Image (cartoon, rainbow, N blue to C red; front, side):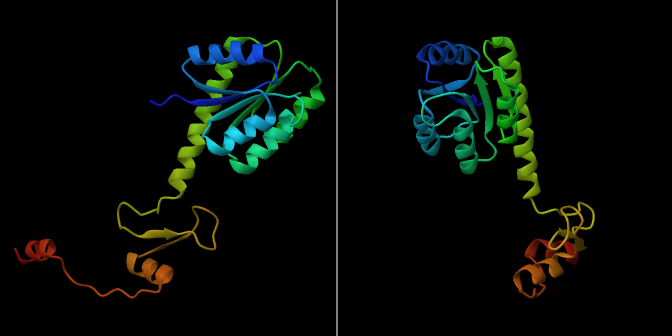
Length: 186
């Protein structure tokens, strides 16, 4: 299994060093950035499963970074942590799309549990998105569900011929492959 990748953002080098090492010891790939601007540049050129950022930084703050990154990849996990204990910051972070909000000092084991929970949920969401892109075919009659103009999962079940004709405008001619011919001739 691939290690999950984390972008850790804080303007305090001691946090980057200590938390970065702790996350690596817990089997995560970690890149660090000492500002929101550096983090955004890294995010534009690399893939990350999760961003963990301080809220209060010079320049681009944690919420501004969150909003910029979510414009690039709305599925990325996002934690904001801060020494500010104000509930208004937490509400603003969550409304902006953060998955979690931690107040410093935090329990490192709790952080790992929260990260693992978030990453598991993220994997489930990604699988659902993948499966939604698969063409639904009935395993008994081989009809295909066409969700065009209907809510997902409530489309009309069509024969393969009808589905292809509607989607592509192609009319099918029927023939017989050599294997089926041999089978039918027996």
